[in-house]
Amino acid sequence: MKIMFKKSGPLAATPGDTTFRIRLTELSAGHAGRPVLHRLTCEIPALTTTALVGPNGSGKSTLLGVLAGVIQPTSGELRHVGGRPPAFVPQRGAVGDALPLTVRQAVEMGRWGERGPWRRLTRRDRATVDAAMDRMGVAGLAGRQLGELSGGQRQRALIAQGLAQESDLLLLDEPATGLDPEAREHMATLLTELVGDGVTVVHATHDLDAARAADACLLLREGRLVGHGDPGRLLTSSALAQVRQPV
Image 1 (cartoon, rainbow, N blue to C red):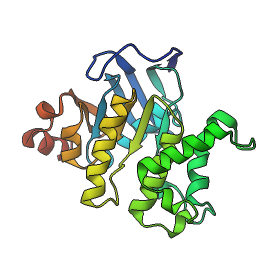
Image 2 (cartoon, rainbow, N blue to C red; image 1 turned 60 degrees about the horizontal axis):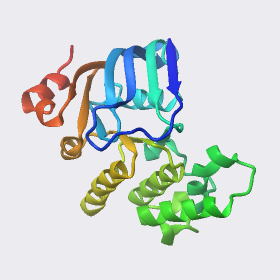
Image 3 (cartoon, one colour; image 1 turned 135 degrees about the vertical axis):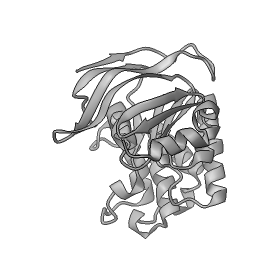
Image 4 (cartoon, helix red, strand yellow; image 1 turned 180 degrees about the vertical axis):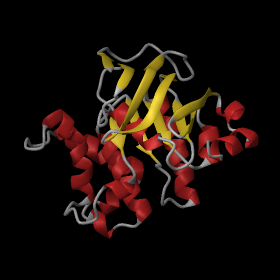
């Protein structure tokens, strides 16, 4: 197993550039001794949106966890090229309803990587939190408890927490879950804007329209990579039918 981080400034690239942000080489990973991902080899291009597509159990969430550093590979190599740790937004169900957090407190947690949980936020930190909440349309919910929110509101609050980290790599697990059509459209616009701002976005999704709108796609089946590249080429009816079939 080998994990490599190349610390650098902003990548000299433009949206659509083929410079990679992440490279996987023969990477395998799993949970508690149970293999999930099997010898993945691919590159995730910098300054693009990359969609992870596959049925439940295909390894999308596990791959995001590996990219985020919360799951360690069991073999192979993971190489990051970038200046900051990834920002990871798990599925909203991964955050307990019983947590006594307001929306603002939850978004402020995105600054802990910079300040630590016990140090007071600076004026710049507070401005960053405000900007993230404004961007996700949750500023008016700042004083509400997370557990009181609708699914869509909570998802937007968690994504605001990710934005507050100011990373150049944003990892999202099913970001459109619980969102109505208008909010999903806003999400798609946001991802495009983030790439323009210098962020590489990787998101797992069951929404084929969202996947086809991405710049690149990784197609997974039972923990194996069965295709990667242009979504228009990969996400055909025949390819998707094959992915859903049991081995």
